[in-house]
Image 1: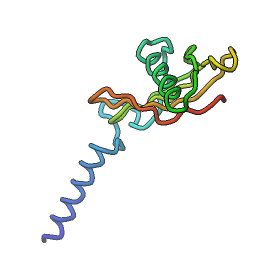
Image 2 (image 1 turned 90 degrees about the vertical axis):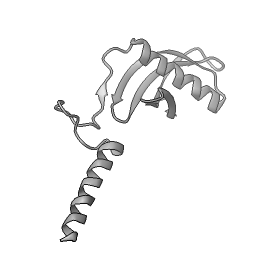
Image 3 (image 1 turned 60 degrees about the vertical axis):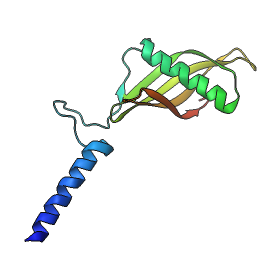
Length: 125
């Protein structure tokens, strides 16, 4: 008899932990599942542009470059415990040449504290 209760407890525990920490369950009231990338509809939205500027600035600090943000070319978001932004950014190299090139940045925004983290910055592509 205790084996049934242990199994039930374990199943409930796994469900609760998965729901809370892993973003693997569907969002209630939504036809899509958490985990699907959605395009950014407005590439001139001030919040998304600020995230693109942050990505370029953070890359400049980390890699000691002098890229100058120009504009967003494309963007996608992934909603979950933290919001992920996959952005294609146009930037000019302020030292070498004045030609804009495209770069791809992945930025994570923690929802609770609104802290941004640059996960990767690749390019020019």
